[in-house]
Image (cartoon, rainbow, N blue to C red; front, side):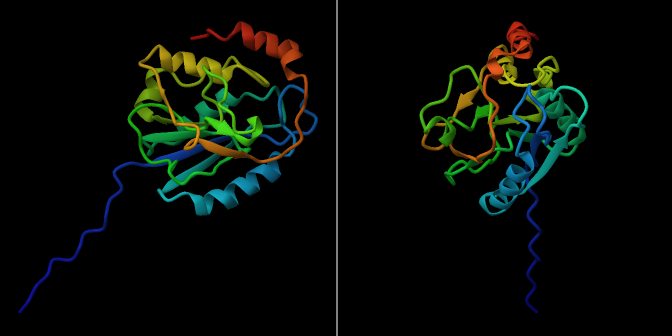
Length: 207
């Protein structure tokens, strides 16, 4: 009698959760809150076929009250994702275009979005890790996550880059690998001239 041992099911070594801070609020004049429902639908449809690694997607939605706070929503999502050992912190209006950017596990924090149609595919601003950032659970805890002190639009991703640099730094994908497409939505101009933005600038070095 021949006997062959049945193959054990493959157990994934790592567990990814993609966190998306979200609010649809057309009347919000402090952040880019218009057209987010459409962007989210497009993002989910696209990423369902793009992603080749198993992943949970957690959309963390803020109520209509108060000033939008992206960093706070990332922190909420992180605390809810107890079974994940790494994360991609993702804007809802950006989708990856290069399959080499496969969202697989990386030991070091890595800025994934390094060029985007929003900037005509030129290299993005230095010292900013917005759009898509991959990070382990251990590192997120070590740097105490995102700051909660950035409301509305601007500077929270600069502050996150500073936190990472104080704790060993981060990598960035080459622009050809970190190429993203912006999902079009109505943009509010002049957000860098608001009192809220001035307060965010003052909080840039908040740790």
